[in-house]
Length: 188
Length: 111
Image 1 (tube, rainbow over the protein chains, first blue to last red):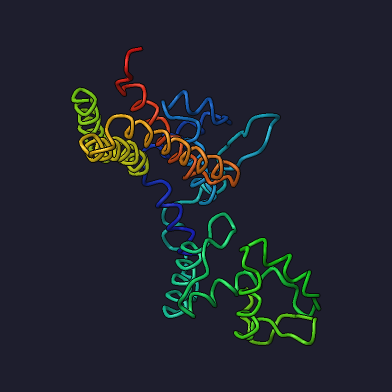
Image 2 (cartoon, each protein chain N blue to C red):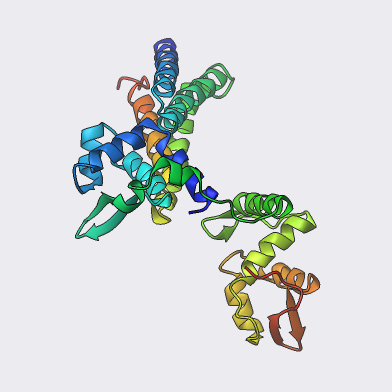
């Protein structure tokens, strides 16, 4: 377990509603509506809390007809606090961490549900957004202009501007009417 | 409209108390949703105060604005549901629930 995971576990449990959900689940599997009724919360609020618990690996869900049934990840919950607290940090240096936080902030600002809301003016931000779009292209694959546009338009209607910018940024390379990922692209 | 504004003020005060209670009992996320709900009453009160005495606006303009909120927020909620965005589904439902209550207390003209 990494320190980041340990932090997620502690954060998700440091909320009384989620602690009460975990407490209810100690009695057995339950579905959203039943938990909502027991805890006097709306089903969507329960779903929100369940998502956090799931992200921390504390609960497991499975679909059963129309319902999502939740149960505790007992293996993880059996770990002692000492074991969780002694988890090791991932070796990511501070600079890298800051850059990743900045990148995520730009993505969260400019993208909504996978669509680019507007093209950033600032070059650095623009590049981050374009690199995310570039993630849709297969390295080494040659694309026609039509294929390229069809991919870009899924993100933003102004595919011409984006295509041109991606070429000038070196994210895409162009040879006549053929396009492929450029060498100057950071891949995920 | 005076009673309507008083109702909104009461809801804001009750909301503040809910937020404080939830925070005190360690329910930070639920307190955040209570803040969303309280903000809706606050927004509606601000809109009402701003439009009610404005020349060419008045009561009808307030009702029309509430209708516009309903439309915009419903669309945002549909989008959140479509994308399985758990947080924004709760936020959207909370906003619309509060707005529904505001509209239910809006003094409609007797016909």
